Length: 427
Image (cartoon, rainbow, N blue to C red; front, side, top):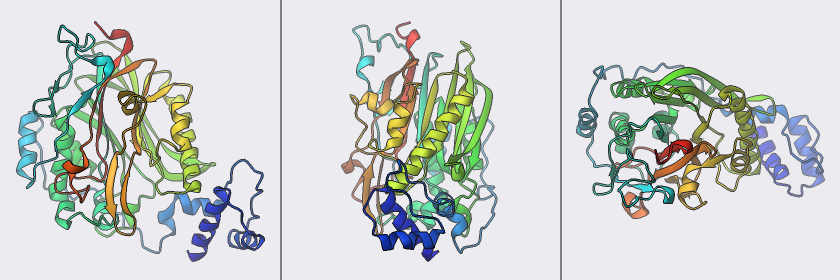
């Protein structure tokens, strides 16, 4: 393990284009049993053993794998159908603190016209008085999409070292209802989630609201090395069954230079019942951590993701959500937004071409305060326009301890956006 970490440090220097001494190159060769890379090569590709360590970190730990099942919520039961108000009331009874308030921001192209309509959009409503969104749109020409890394319970409680978050705020019996409230508060048509390690609970709660969903775990989830885990974490997608028919779904373990990584993608193709129009929805969670080498790995994962999407979406307009662990300056962001399918970022569209200053804001031991943008909702710009996005709380609203906290259950904020089909705007 120590040798792999030493090799990783040298590989990071090589990936960043740093000048490495001949002695260091010889050391790298001895550690990896591979020659040091040619400095003139366009991309530094790590030796396979080092690459496996980078993309499948859990397999290299000394901790035993603990293969638990999703059983921690067996005592929780939801009726087949609950009204939205009934479920919200149940969520609030389980909490001791009021959640942070958020408001929708209509985009410039959807500003209220003199007749009280938003560019002809009659059914979208933003309740600016209560700073909550109003009823979900019932129009077949609009989609409300929620994207959220909900924070794995096993990782958040046992691994992530949140310096300012009280232990009580990380306990699952309270967090689970905060998560459900955050989701159903905004009445999304489509829900894309990452770090899901309690899928059965979420599936039961959301089924009571008319959603159906699917889950795809990471093959070597870090949760499986934590005592008391509830199974692996992974990605999930839910959709409203009264609005959509499911055509098919697919999943993929993303590859990096032909080596399977520990990151996954999940895809569903949907048909809108009222109109017959079809849309592809996908979600992913790319490799975390900073550095030139990790940035290159994310770019390779992004390329594999885009190939997968092109093969499976069959020309349908695309909504791609996820925690990409990449700021807008990283190559993977540019690769996605420069893709031939002409994907744009919903929040950048709503903020005059710039991403918001943060989608995650946390304080960790040893790392300090981290405040940056790494979560996105990408969409096919030819087919969709952005009507509104859900704003993020200010620093004053969330408090000096940042998130997670008693008032917010994850270290990432949810992203919610309203998309409309361009050819139906004004009808």
